[in-house]
Structure formats: C-alpha cells, structure tokens
Length: 306
Image (cartoon, rainbow, N blue to C red; front, side):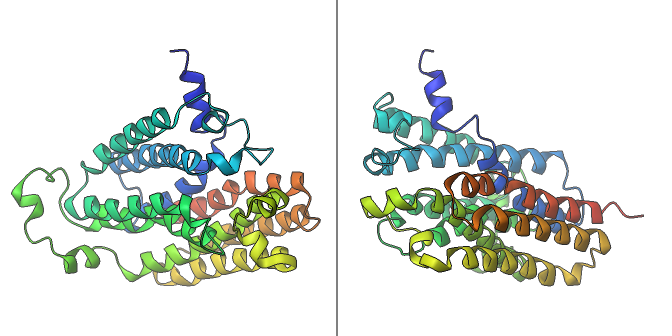
C-alpha cells in the first residue's frame, strides 16, 4: 500500500493531458467509423484502453530512459530514475496494465485483437527510438495514432464477443485484417501523426539543453532554428489532412468551425513557443489536448444534426 503514490506518479496520474492526447483522435475515429455514437461498449473499451495503455507506456518509457532521466532536471525524481521503484516493479505493473487493456480488446473482434499486437509493438519500440532516430516523435506519432485503425476495425471488422470461438476467427486472413481498416483511417492516422510531431516537438523544446548534453535525439534538436516553423507546419498538416480526408463524410459546418477553433489554438501556441522559453513550450504542450477536443466536438457534433 505504501507504494501506491509511487505507482500513481509512475503513470502520471496527476497529469491527464497525456492520455487525453490519445483519447480524442481515437474517439473521433470511433464516431466516424460508427456514423455517430458507437455505443457504450466500444466507448468504454477505447476510453479505458487508452488510459491503461498510456499508463503502461509510461512504465516502459521510464525504465528505458532511467539513466538519461537522471541528467534532466524535470525527470530526475521520477520513481524509477530516483530508485524509489525498481525496474522489476515498474515492468510488472506495466505488464499488468497492458494485460488489462488486452482483456478489453478481447471483447471486440478477432481482427482488432490482431491489430492490437501491431499497436503494442510500436509502443515498445518508441522508448528506444530516441537513441537512433533523428525524429523519434514520428515513431511516437504512429504509437499515439494506432487507436484510429483499431477503432475502425472494432466497428467494421466482424462480430464482437466471439474471440474465443471458432466462428469469431473463421475467414480471418491477412487480407481481411487489412480490409477491416478503410483508407480514410490511414489518412487520419497520418494527419494525427503530424499533430503528435507538433506537440511533442514543443515538449522536446523544454528539455533541449539537457538532451544535447546527454546525446538524446529529438525533433527539437534535429529541426534546430526551424523548430518553431516546424511546429506550425505540423499543426497545419494535421488539420488540413483531417479536413480533406473527411470531405466524403459531409460532416458539415460544425466540423469545419471546429477545425477553425483548433487552428486558432495552434496560432496561440505559436505565441507561447516562439520565444523558446521552457515555461511557454511546456504550457503549449500541456494544453494541446484542447486542440484534439475541439476536433472531436466537431466530429461528434456533426452526427447530432437533425
């Protein structure tokens, strides 16, 4: 019981912005795939699953980065880095959270179960990408966006609650798994990847000086003096791709007003990060979930018409 506060600190329970950044695009995709409210079952599966997997990701990330985090003022007191929790404790807790999320996926359908393994693989790769990839935020973008194709497969990939029966797996092939996710889902994933690049570059700008000292690779370092311009270009790519990709769905004025509201927020974030101050960059990152919320409100509100 004495370690409960440490486990809550490990999964950033006091900072819900992290899982909200994953939740809003996932729920937007769920509404689009369902043509409106997806039902309480899928809503709970994807909401709880998002929280659980983000929390599990924090456990893996802190274990992978524990030696680097000692040299970064903002992260030096994290439970694993400071030694208050052991590596084994963090990994066991992360595995428990991931298994709980997988149990939720098992209530959907066979193809979504298969897609969940791909999502897990990308999530496990990300913490180590920072050693080798110049813009590891792109890997994070795929990991943070994988709820989008999974939402489509959960709605369109076959009957639910039959994962443990032969009927649930009959006819499941690589082609049917791929076909369960329409092209629009991959366009939305691409757009969302650019949003992740935007807000995680802001996040990386906070720690740039420390990351340079310890040899960590980030988009903020790679972009150099073009970091602010890059952030704004990423925001623009995200909003344009989502707006264009969803034209066939005729979401109407509500959706495009929401895109405009999200764009205004992005412009406000420019005022926060253009000076490259730590406080401004961290504030921009921390408030980014409102950008995703605006887009979700536009999507969900469009299906409430008439």
